[in-house]
Amino acid sequence: MTDNHNSRNILVVDDSREVAERIALILNRSGYLTTIATEGGEALSIARDTLPDLALVGLTVPGLDGYEVCQQMRSDERLKDVPVIIMSAASGADHFEKALEAGAGDFMALPVQDGELLARVERQLQMARLRRENRTLREREHDRVLELNSMKDRFVRSLSHDLKNAVGIVLGYAEMLVEESSGAAPQVQYYAGRIQRGAKQLISLVNSLVDLARIEESIGFNLEPVSLPVALRGCLEEAQLRVADKQIELVIAPIPEVTFLMDAARLNQAVGNLLSNAIKYTPAGGRVEFRVQVKGDQVVIQVADTGLGIPPDDIPQLFKKFYRVNQREHISQEGAGLGLYITRAIIERHNGRVSVESQPGSGSVFTISLPISG
Image 1: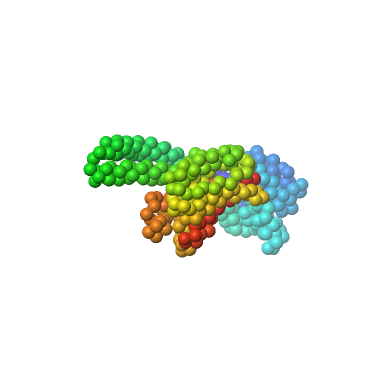
Image 2: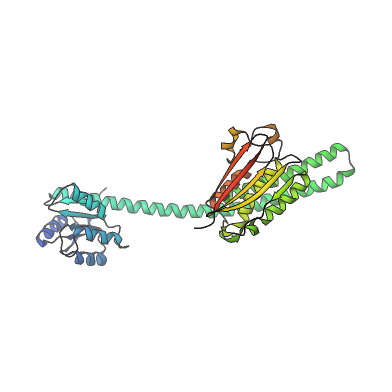
């Protein structure tokens, strides 16, 4: 479909007014509007005033040559999208390449036949129209993505609130049932305990799913300068409470005083997931070590344990969503297979990486590397 020529204003620039007027006449007969310039500086001034739909620029115009006119148009915010065809009596591949390097859309050797001139002009105008339409579509798509993200944020918040409330009610009654059944038959106590554990697992799953949605969309992810010892205090205190119940030795090496951009709550969550897993999969009498080092522009956090270990075939899958090691000792431990996936997502949002080394029966070492500069 051809553009409406009456709305197309073409700037014709050539050091020969006679050549410029001849080109303008051909274009006028086909319904285009034209403006003529014979110098490079004059052409730029006219272009800035009229904002043409296309410019035909002679290579040898005085002041600024065709390449320079094109380059300056490309560096001008208002003119950068105006298609340019550079014209010259000289022909050759080197001229065409230089024209493209300068930002022109085409190079045309003079003299030019009427049909060829109109065809090249029309092609450049159509390409410019397509670029505008694509840009408009991209802008609309960007706005739509922002709108969908906002809707998702509201949905996640609503989901978090409603599900937690509903499951919280179930858990509350389950805990009351456990208390009331203390003197009941063993079977009743067993069922009450199962309901309570199930409700706790469901709350944990809901929290993980909500976290997963928010982390994947970077919702509420805020980077600010925070001291690493301060950021990790919460997960370390929780780990100390966990090991007391399992008779596991927890060794926490001194944490270097280093401050860098982080989401402290999310980093605390990521490291807490690793500590929780280490404690969960380490039998009584085992050992969990937590250590931090600064190496150049990286801070390296390690969680090592003497627990079950991970089979080599499972390691490549370990950080995938909902993945769990398919062995009896691992499956017997509660979990939805989201903790390590969430940990990796959080660390990658910090431009870091997380890895693991492990041997079945000999424990595992999880390593987080985070940039602390730049």
